[in-house]
Image (cartoon, rainbow, N blue to C red):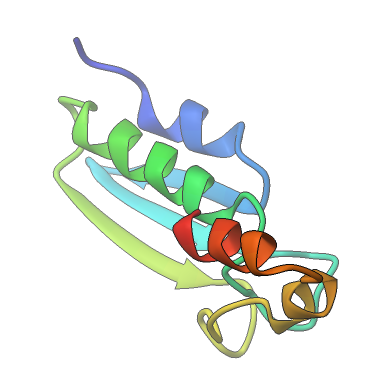
Length: 95
């Protein structure tokens, strides 16, 4: 089954996409933050973005870019402040 990856990606938070001759350009931009970080929802949305591209028969290539000066700086260290128990730490790591 082929899907329109651009529409699917544009429906995701912090991701936007456009297509030019089958080349899908995806821009990551967490507009409420100074930098893009891997945190709540990012990996899920990234997986949906990837699956949408893979299942789009018209897609020939994928370019990932950032709306920031940096691409993605890494994990959201602000999440660490919310960890109160070992169980919460394990849940964060397993996600």
